[in-house]
Image 1 (tube, one colour):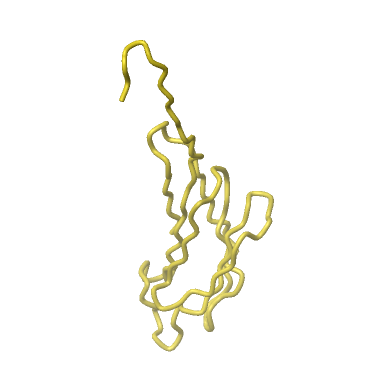
Image 2: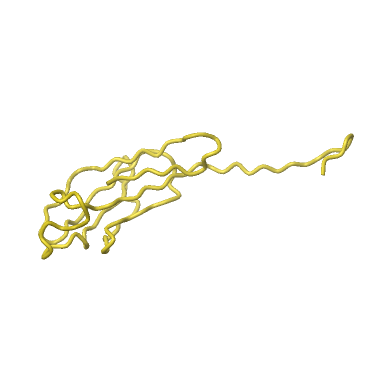
Length: 115
């Protein structure tokens, strides 16, 4: 309660904006999570999330849902890279770049997806 003529204390917590990225694996031919050849499912692929300078932050082995997510990341540049292709597939050497950027002072979390 603020009263006239009295000192009031107010406490603010300045939270740093963070980001989240989600990878979704798809078959290059079907453009979906369904493998072209059911003998060779996409599950089992390994992906890493890397800092822009190439430092590995976290590695995932993709399960049946074919997704991987990392949250509470500092804003900046990252990329997803396949480190092991599933059986029957060739390694995708593409760097799937993710840019986590500041939106505004009232948006504490920025979400970007790489597919």
